[in-house]
Amino acid sequence: MTTALTRCVEVLQQQGVIAYPTEAVFGLGCDPDSEQAVHQLLALKQRPVEKGLILIAGDYQQLLPYVADEQLTDTQRQRMFSRWPGPVTWVLPARDRTPRWLTGRFRSLAVRVSDHPDVHQLCAAFGRPLVSTSANLSGQAPCRTREAVLQQFGDDFPVYPGQTGGRQNPSEIRDVVTGELFRQG
Image (tube, rainbow, N blue to C red):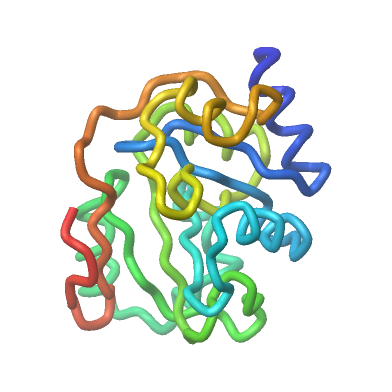
């Protein structure tokens, strides 16, 4: 493991927040199972818990503890897998035990299996998905470089170095059950 990867995984294990490159922008991430880490991330973003969050993973298996896969039809799964891995976030029914700090006011959870190699490395090394929200302070533009993250969050903020995937728009968000488009990608 590289020094940067080791440091970021250690921060995640210690219930901290990191920044890392995704398909279009740098994301802020933390351990989805740590209420403390999620609340720290929400405070950084000045984002209310009611909005819910996205989980990003290197593979679908990492998401199964959080989503009610058994509620999906084969057609819905095919629709989802036809766009993964990639820059499409799907809203799936959440498991009853999925924490409210992830789902917010919803009974569903937004999830993405990314095709970004840095996301794969982080999720593989950490052993589970990450919370994923754009790295930016409220009212600021999302960070597209490591330098922009450090400028907004401070020189000591843990950032996994790398490049974004070059996409201009954030991920598309769709409901896997209805196909409804929530955000154009």
